[in-house]
Amino acid sequence: MTAATALAALTLLAMLTAACTTADSTSDDGPTAAAEEASATGLRFDGPDQGELINAVALEELTFTVTTTNDDERVDALVLLLDGEDVTSQAELTADTLTYTPGTLPDGERELVVAATADGADADVGEDAGAGAEVADEAEDLHTWRFEVKAEPPTLELTSPDGTVGTDGPVLVAGTTEAGATITVGDDTVTADDSGAFE
Image 1 (cartoon, rainbow, N blue to C red):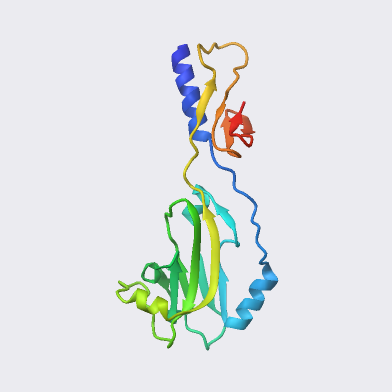
Image 2: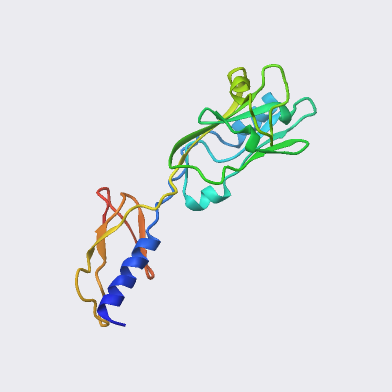
């Protein structure tokens, strides 16, 4: 392998393996709060923790479910609002469960609200919600998930090595990327500092 090929391979490896770290959830909600909410509303809400950071891997598996816990509640009368936009038509409905899987979302802070229609009318689940905005305006909020999506890989610039890479001895890999990102080269992993620098 030539030195130029080795350097190109090293650069590609570093770029492909740079990934944002997933912060721990800062949720104030726990199992007790969820149980109390389910008891009060007759509905159970399953999804990410409040304030959770969703990376690319987690985004692929991100699912929100609302399940009835008694016979008096109907999930077909619920509305889902993602950042204020009615996404109820994209959800799947079974007899007692409403499931929403967004698939892809742009990076940034997001909010998904579960609301009940004012008169208990059926929401447009799985259909083209033509009157979704009107229903949403008259709906009563039952639960809100607040989370942040950070799925785009950070940019990465190598400052070392800047020349020929030999086959003998260690090679110093250094550069800049997003602060707090994790960089993996071979078996070595480092975390970028507050300025985004790593080596």
